[in-house]
Image 1 (cartoon, rainbow, N blue to C red):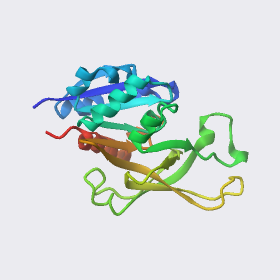
Image 2: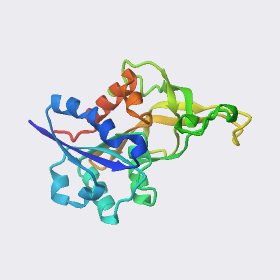
Image 3: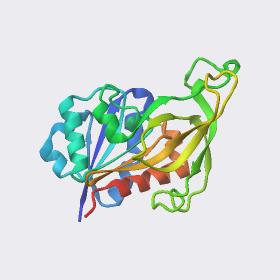
Length: 232
């Protein structure tokens, strides 16, 4: 049976929403999805379209969505449509909507910067080498089973979150003399969320296509999309 996937992309160009989503479209098609693409989240307000969508893959950093679009997305997920995404395309979308933030369960707060002496005045100032560590749940969950802890050199997301998420992997922000916090901060790096009849999947790595090509990151995103898809 053919499944339907809707790729919604846009927002801040710095996260390469077109190139990033194009990495995963062949995977979806190879797994039997009929894939459609929209360049605006306003498609979420189309209730009839949402009823026949089994999976939404969202890559829209910041930007805005109307109240009608957010309500449509929440209704769709609650009715069984899956929602999946990575990095700012899902965890830093529609900052002015508390309803959206509640749906996702985690919101980007910051990405700690490199030592002041090593900053160049470009995006690499926010790149750190950090570990993504599997939780006990992550070692058993179908999205991350068989994967080991791994390291990345990219933005390390600090995420504000609630207790309704199921955390599959974490990352720890260290204490440095040039940071204002005084103890290590453990932040979710990969999580899932049950919402009504639907599922939400979020991975915080994915600042650019190179990060998404990392074997571990790509495996997590691909499995996450399959997991989130509406159950038959």
